[in-house]
Image (cartoon, rainbow, N blue to C red; front, side, top):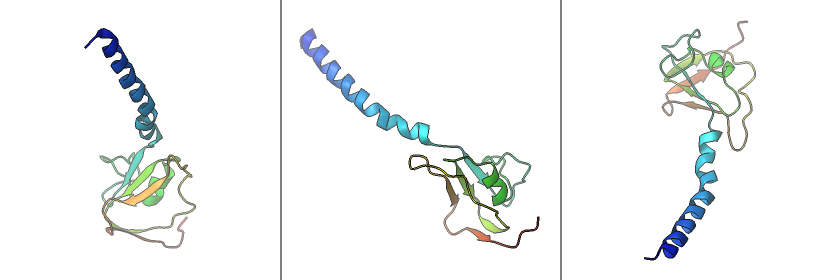
Length: 112
């Protein structure tokens, strides 16, 4: 294969890679932080997987738009005032159970 042919092939490969790069990297930049709530946690924790907070209310309070809150198994009886911060189409704010149908929220009257 001549060096001119090799150059042309390398150029086409480079162009295709550069075309795909924004689509590959966009999800990396669009992801927010992930916070955790567990019945074994404490609201003085930082809401990480290793140190989850205890209440959903605390978990929501540390979130920013585009973040995710993962709620551990259990029943959470608490009042949640307001809601999560707004996300965007490219970076939605998400609240989800760690395990489907294992986290239950029973809203109650505010105690504050």
